[in-house]
Image 1 (cartoon, rainbow, N blue to C red):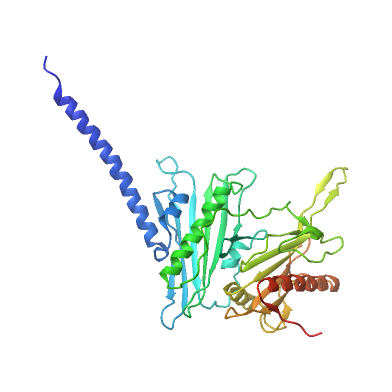
Image 2 (image 1 turned 30 degrees about the vertical axis):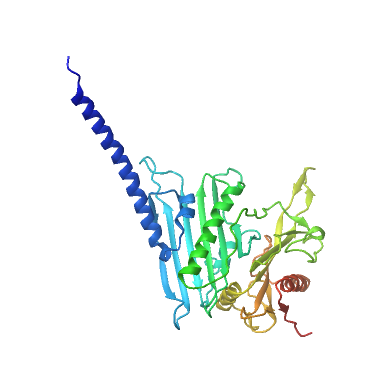
Length: 392
């Protein structure tokens, strides 16, 4: 009997075509993903870091594209925004774990605006105090909507200040990362998200001729404190160190370590364990006041917001050494060396038992001003700035 060579050859040919088809499909998806990343934000997303989060495809552009201005010539104003997400479609053979990256880059002046949450500092100042990146990076990381209990989602933001040379305005680079089925309790997740921001910042500095001195590669990223991770005020050593308490209301601080980060925060409130009516113990964690320090471009951004939302009769924030905010709070400024402009310090009430529009008592207002002065003085000194003194 003659060997059946023809069917064997046919089978091998079909197998080769099938393998080639799969390879071509994978290669095509990767090519499409590369195109999406290359077109987003003028190509400043570094592919390797983005793929670590999104995978190699399929990817889709988010409908948030903005590309205005430049840092060349006399314009000296830049606003770039973009977003890329994993193309998720259930029961269609595509990935089912959602993941996305949103990037915003700004250089130059800020328009007065009452919308704070959309800003660079607003993206990393929504929860408890952000943690500094360190390793020479002038930036911070914070969680925004992390699901600690079920570890089903990690959402966070990293914001970096690039000090440009050659007379160009500084750049702010902020990257939001969202990922399903992972947890920020895993240090690899935090590191993966923050590295997207540092890689993007480095490429942005090159893309727009910023020439900033970049930090070293990150090896670890801290985890911001959560609701129950407060510290008695007498034991604070970071951004809440040296701040006064207020009997019955302020006993603890929620802080991060102090560094060269251009954003610093401290929350003050009650973190004591109290007896319940049933005789058990309950840990209270009421944050009543939020203190923030803004430097360089972050101070300019915050001042633009305060001017855009100012409703009071006193001086506009930044016009003078100190004043009152429209939201039951106060501000102070400090002079800083070089061309950074003034630093801005604020305290606002976050008391869950009060409305933002409620007028504080004389005693509470005095406490806020005292706490703000102590916070601003320590922060300014650490950054080589001098707090502006008030009269009286």
